[in-house]
Length: 271
Image (cartoon, rainbow, N blue to C red):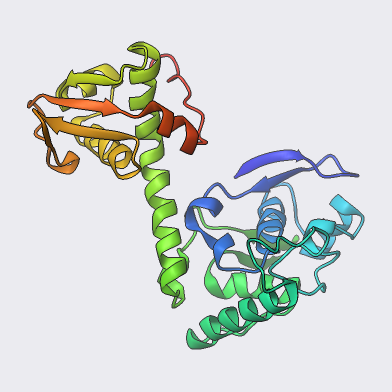
């Protein structure tokens, strides 16, 4: 769990499951899925025993705007208190909500799950999906979450658009640290040259990555349009580079900085 600032009105730190973003559930569930996961994560702390209602009362005096008020508030797929973006969704909020509910309901029904309409019903769906567990003990209700969250695609029939989005997110999560390490070496240690004559072995030694991870990072840079890999004047396949063979790495730094939002952090000492 990741701890967050204390909830208003209490000394309790809110907690969020570290695997929430990587699993991709926010792209499948109504928007209250995020604060509900934080609420359940907080209820799973060792020093708390009680219902989600009890925690909501303790932490927010029974009303949390992020969750829509209380656990009996209706689920939505958009934030009602924000201005609607008609460029991104020209159909308007009402039509967007109707479309999202149709897809969400069809997906759950096809998998044999009930369609929740309130935050409380969504918390019950979490139990069915294995996103959380609840146990009645002599001391009271105890909540918990698995160390590794199940993936949406393992439980639900996702459409092609959502599947592609989640695959891309997981690929970026896998490759992001590798790209960061390689780019830190190129930009900070080498001064950001437009062209470098190198090899996977050399880059691996310089970055502390293994050759296979360097290959993955290079392939991601090429696929994103940030780099080219050439042998002589011919374009080379980054995914098929041999570890010892030299190649020319040509970086498009303008493209990289215009399209990347991730900060390239220097590796910690000893890493």
